[in-house]
Image 1 (cartoon, rainbow, N blue to C red):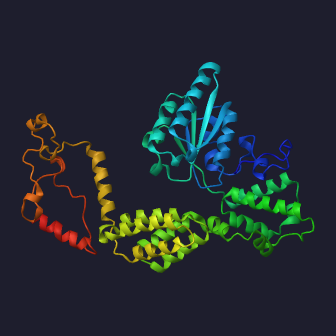
Image 2: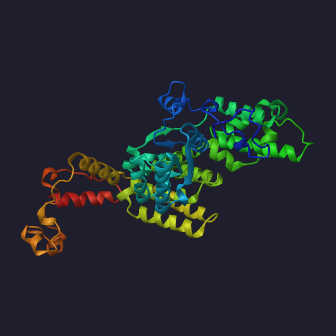
Amino acid sequence: MELFTHASQNHKSDNAPLAHRLRPSSLEDFIGQGQVLGENSPLKKMILKGIVPNLILWGPPGVGKTTFAELLSKYIKADFLSLNAVATGAKEIREIGERAKEKRAMYQTQTLVFIDEVHRLNRAQQDVLLPYIEKGVFTFLGATTENPSFQLTSALLSRSRLVVFERHNTESLRKILDRAFLIMQKNKADILTQDAEDYLLQIADGDARTLINSIEYIENYLRADENILLPFDHIKLKDFLSKDSFVYDRNDSHYDTISAFIKSIRGSDADAAIYYLARMLKGGEDPLFIARRLVILASEDVGNADPKALGIATAGMQAVEFVGLPECAINLAQVVTYLATAPKSNRSYLSLKKAQAEVEASGNLKIPTGIRNAPTQLMKNLGYGKDYLYSHDHPKGYAKQQFLPTEIKDLVFYEPVDRGYEKHINEFIKWLKS
């Protein structure tokens, strides 16, 4: 929502949503994102020449990703098709690809396909996109609020250019505010005192959509009540908007709060963890989002120091789904306090990272023949499964043998800590090696 048209564009109805009235007609109307679309940026130069590569737009809500995508179609004279990944399946993607292929072949018409919340596409759906992107059937634009490296396949990432959109700074937000009042043909000073204006910018916290919605709310109220006492000062405006959750989501910042929440649990501070949980719930955070984060944390930060943690976190997530708000907050509180006071270990997580790094470095090393699958006589003749020692046939359920490929047979990936249940795991590993 950071692209805006000049006030002279009177063809946009006064009854249209304010965001629509503020939409841009060119890159020159773009407010903010100078790091991406500055005067000498390579991307801007390409766009002005009608060249738009496949792009993934990554950034928080309200920074103009969707509006930017719509604007690009004008520069390459392409049909613009907007989709939301939540409501899009592999079948729809194929149909769109085939239609775009026909248009290109018959009319030399380009198609720009924009997929919002692209991180919601599963791996199979992302794979369906690839051949159309590779062959240039359409130009692909994806928008996401999530880290693309976690959510998108490497194949899709490698065929797209990542563009990072940042939150608006105060200067950009103030320009948006001024533009809005110009579009509305209102004198800002007649409606807002300086401290009220500053308050609007503060609660927007870099999100133009939030700012525009607040301004539009004020505009609608002015239409409904011509006798309202103006201007709004800070206190009166805060009472008028009366959106506590709105303040959490923007001013305190979703990202900062969840970060503080996770780090408090990791740091074994149950009081801080409960406090941030309460703040998130008060602010309207999705309890399932919180529950999923707790399931991840149970394995990443508690791990085998307390193996029950994962089961408790998973049960908590199921309880949230079953119970719902407001009572599911109690389930979350139980999980949070348990995880915060549980012994901590990240060694399972680190072992995975070490193993993944080794696989990347050494590739598919030969698996020892003794532990290979041998369902046929031919495989048995090749030595598959030969000399395999079945652990349960041996005293104490253990028989020493080689499981890792020969080239890395002495590597150690998992090194438990000496606390919680991992202390017992450590003792068991020492016994195995003795």
